[in-house]
Image: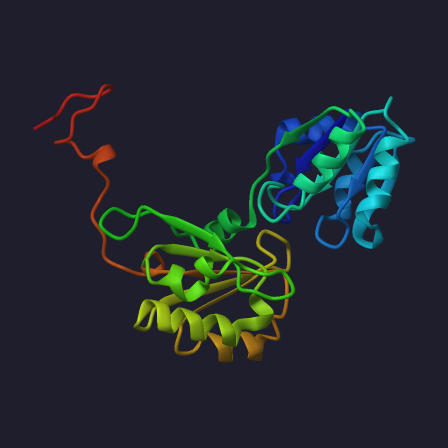
Length: 248
């Protein structure tokens, strides 16, 4: 059995209880060493085989799994494996070998970044939509999902894998939003060396370059970062629902 587990964004305690308990039982662990803290390996049982996939190809990863069908294998990904985790291509290969697998979700870096700046993506009267995206680099992005077009929606945005192209990001956001917008950059969210930059489209590029941030950072964009908003109906004393009567 293979378990794809989200290790969380950085802090080793942000893996789920189910994820850690499964990790403890693993005979073999293949972890994304370029992004996942090696501290997770301290929870592995004695004698567990550990592979760092940072230098492995897809074929090499699958070979380890196929050669050990009778063992419990953990494939430890950063954040939540369903977001930019490249797990489908692995699961498709496992299907060919008739190897069973399960996915255990984790805390994504985009929610970790929001917690770092103590903000809520979805505010009444501001936006009820969050867009997760990236700009095109070596991995292509469909033309219909160009950042400029997405920015035109006006929703809260979390931009992955794009900090090294911050000028390109700002240019597309500026054209899409059509105005200056609040923006936050969170480097290595929840790690001990986490850094947060707050700014707007007018100054964030300069701040990022001055800080020397070139990788492992979330870009959060939208009015949710600093705005006036309506309070939620959920706790409004004049609003009745199935668990509470109106108090007005």
